[in-house]
Image (cartoon, rainbow, N blue to C red):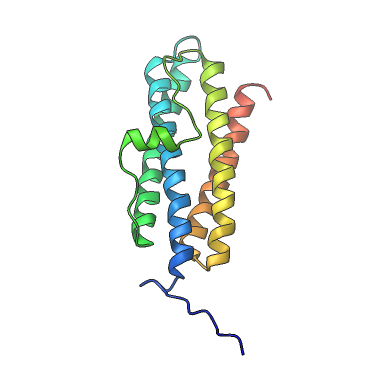
Length: 163
């Protein structure tokens, strides 16, 4: 008779190995959010041209939302019983979204925003699958909400570029 593998559960009732895998994925997502956040701040600071007033405000809305989501992600990692990455050196090493510096042209900035959203949405979809498999409704709900919001933003920023 085969011996059944015992599963250790965390304080919130999740398999500890699955929670670790989720926390690792969330730390990767956090690194990408933090780099995207700094990029958005730079776009806000440096935007020039005819669309200055419109984009200056949009980029402020964007970075304000990104920092709130970064905080939620870090808190979710803590809830899963792990430690969030909390150094920019770690974010830079881990992030697939790369630093963008001194961009003031509207099309370049918006294109960078769209690329970043594409990266985030892809990572969040992968976390959605992991959280579903782990029975982690908290992470699942967070990722679903982010994806829904960001898909709409992709549509809007794409419309700005005429796509």
